[in-house]
Image (tube, rainbow over the protein chains, first blue to last red):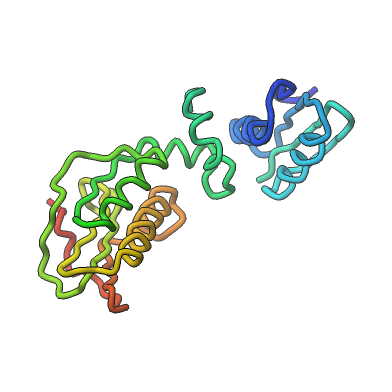
Length: 71
Length: 142
């Protein structure tokens, strides 16, 4: 069970990652965020950006990501 | 907390690693007084405003004692000033491209100070001739 959930299925780039970034900022380090998404572009780009900013991708499957906020 | 219109308007800045939502909130909530004159002043003022920083009303024209062609100064509340400011002062004709460059640089310096990415400085001056000096006293301190 994630600490927070976020639905970005209606968003387009770059708002997909903006929403994820803002949601991660609201979490404490170590807490998790479940993201619901649709399409190849966010499925590919969101995990990459998340890792670049020091967070972790715990699970990645089509339409769903489980992220953990970094320190 | 950013509003939905603010998120939409500043989404490109929020994407930047150094800014994010927290940084954008700082930019939106730190009033800056911009003083100076000329193209560099206008560019700095417009750049800060475009980034969401509220501009305080204040004197636009400043005449200082420096002999430099252009003086760039940035300070923060944390450094003891009542208001954050960027001051640009031209004592003579400055090449337009340089003015735009300096205006952008001044705005960037101010934004980095607000975001906590640069050490607070009382006042630092940079002349068009490349001379970097420390200003003895912030002219806007109480």
